[in-house]
Length: 116
Length: 112
Image (tube, rainbow over all chains, first blue to last red; front, top):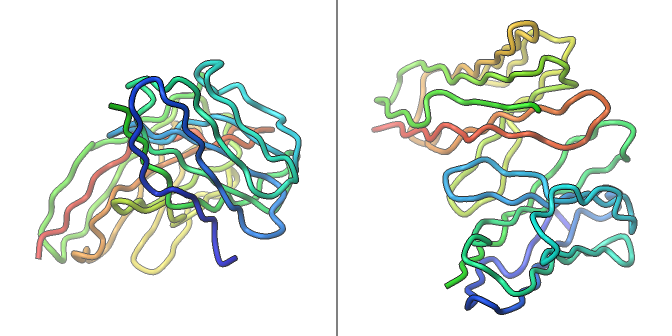
């Protein structure tokens, strides 16, 4: 594809519902990142994948957050039992290279999650 | 822990004005620094990337400088236009890392 795509673009959930956010990275990109951006703040790192391996999940705020990338391409960020504090824009980024060297990260448009 | 701060948080200027956005970071052991632009409802667009060994980068009307020892970077926008209105984010990557660490951004409004 031409760039990183994310779906849905907007999601409204009632507190306690489970949600799943999808990211389609640029074809061939090895690395995939998820970031969380609260209103008026900069994005904060959640998790990192190299191909299908989740190498870093240190930024996930609680065990209600789970991410996967089973075939090393599309990734899903799942949030269980959503809370109001989960309301944010969730950004996905991909890069061509691997952990050992920095490659530019290309960002998707994000999914805006609102928990009522 | 690395902290990135951007000043001002918001800025409103008339069209044509030259302006400077500031970014500071607490730990100078950075690998590089990037400036991004974010439009409402859109993702992040990379504007300029400065390697830690570089002092500045230029792209069109944009110039970014880096003073690693003092923990500061500035983004200079010449002859601002209404189309420059957006949020500008500064981010660093630490040595041997891959995580972007962002500031909170500067919301810029360029008035016609």
